[in-house]
Image (cartoon, rainbow, N blue to C red; front, side, top):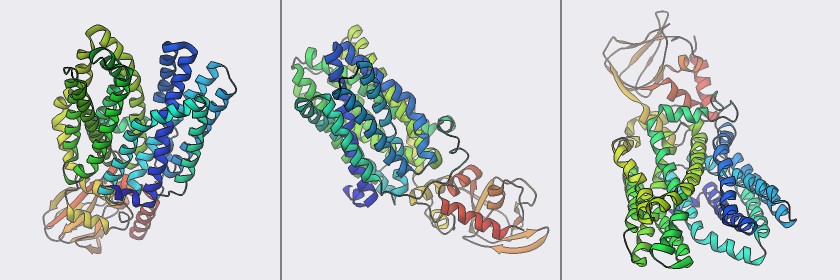
Length: 529
């Protein structure tokens, strides 16, 4: 699995992501400490909301940048913006600025953080040469995230002890400057602008994707749901350690460490397990471990067993997160990929806030045991209701090895990575035509692109024979590219088998990379009457 980061681009992305995660956690803790010193628990809760709510609102809009401009550049700019915001917060803290200004700058820093994951999740498929590499890269990045849960709080504590919150923000700003420079050389073929991607900072394209594709909606709902659970755990772990287990404040830290350690194990395991088996199946297994571990922990009085169950829950969360994000990268259209992940980022931020607000109410009304069962059972219950459509996502594995070979030989599909070719292959429909049948008729509207698998067809314009096409050849692209009626008729000379691709999938694939768009345009020009 770690071979994924041997690639220069992926290695740079991973190194920068380490700095990002440490900065995210360290500044979060530093600001909570600062707020507590200013106004106690109420102020800490208020500053948490002030950081989460603007971030949740901004994330879907900011993610549109990564669909409109080269994602590698947006990622570098995102790190630079975070460094600037954290540096400004450090200056405000160092100069003893008014509390409202410090909170506003901290909220700006937290909001800028939401630019990173959508750009990164959109970039990974473009720099991953194979589906296995993409899975491994997601596993490495999830391992980094979960490892940060273990080490970042302690690191923040050391920096706070040395000099205070301002020093933490300043050090993290410097780390993010380094991150911006590290990812600056990363390059990927720029996605060609499309009408959907050129409309500015809007989330309508992502919403339309989720509204029209229940597979993507299901994955976003599951991944955002676990954020609500994580938000609740900050409160639930305090109640569990202090009241149910009576292990004091140290126990709170140990529970969080067990969760992070389990997450590392789950993320590492995902890279090996899911490559060899069904991704949807491992999403389901991860959900059961994650939710079941939390729910069962509430009924055990022994602290040691609780730590084991919390670690198992963390492993399940890491497993479902890696498998789920990889599936979502395969499903969402390339031109809207970052916005879909931006919408997920916003929903996750909102889920953290809702979970943090809901947990005290549950504990107060029903007690810690019932609260843990309710929070832990959220995703397993959802899984029971959605298991069949989730398992159908197995169909995303490339079904047609021959179709993949045919697609790779087509000039405007050849520049696409294997992950994109697999997505196109899954969208193909195999159709047949008897000898003498007219496959497309000149002058009629066209909504399909065809690749010949078996047999021979004749192409005529105004009744005049133009050419014959055989296995591996293709036709129908002019009507789709130009949005005009069919410019020629195509008739089966013998029984033929064809692969058909619908207009939306064809245009999305051709426009995914400039090289593909240019090749398609050249072929269309050479064939036009």
